[in-house]
Amino acid sequence: MKLSRVSYRDPKLLLIAPTVLLLLVLTIFPLIFSLYLAFCKWELSGGKYAVTTPVFIGLENFLKLASDERFFDTLVNTVVFVGGSVTSELIIGLGLALLLSREIRGRKYLRVMFLLPMMMTPVAVGYTWRMLYHPTNGPLNYLLTLAGIMNYPVNWMGDTKIALFSMILIDVWEWTPFMFLVFLAGLQALPIDPYESARMDGASRWQIFRYITLSALSPIIAVAVLLRSVEAFKIFDIIYVTTAGGPGTATEPVTMYVQILALRELSLGYASAVAYALLAMVIFLAVLFIAKMRKERI
Image (cartoon, rainbow, N blue to C red):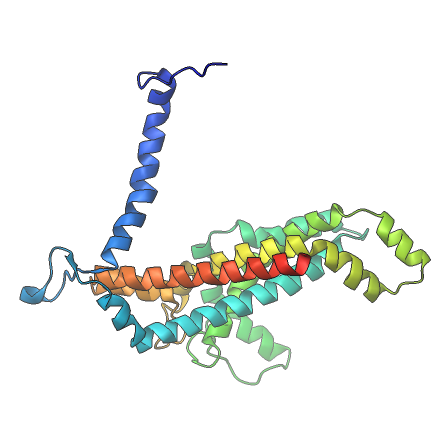
């Protein structure tokens, strides 16, 4: 069987050419160009000392990164944010999925209600919680005081000790529905026979959950955790509209540090180096996580 040659004048190629060109311009070119900038010095601010064209400097940006205290502070904030939010979303989402996978009254309405936060845009979520967190006029402090839980208003976004926790709470509220939806679909796809056999053998509810449900859901849990972790590492919009990284740098993630370097200080080369350092760390953690999950399954 002979394969027909593809002509460059083929109408099919001409039809997909604009899409391919757009993909190259919007994704591949910025990726390659920013990688090149990570090894260059390009400072558009500084008056007569400004570097108006990229100058190749090798690994100097990454050597500078190794002694950048602000980068490590933002990296700690990012890791704490990802760990706290994804872990909370996993536990709460799995619990809600287990609850609403049973036949309870109003189950259909509860499922829809739990999905509503995920449908809102992050900026809208940020402004909503900014009003809820207001220290004097916010309803959250009022309700907690009315319930007798607190005797004084809490500065949720202005206290360095709890500001990052407040950001984690916003992310958990918005993205727990994603975990809930994934786990609910996984639970409904599980076969019934292993559960019936376990009950006949006298297994307890905890044993059924530990050795049947959790074991069967482990691949789905791994995928959900990986997807949410990658997204959480890119957090920017919620923090930008609530605390803008403050107080000080208490809630500033790496992504916001990159934005400050690139768009405020106009240090495009160093900003690219910081961005690629974060990318390398995320890829490294993702590869470790996938390798561990494969090893446990074997």
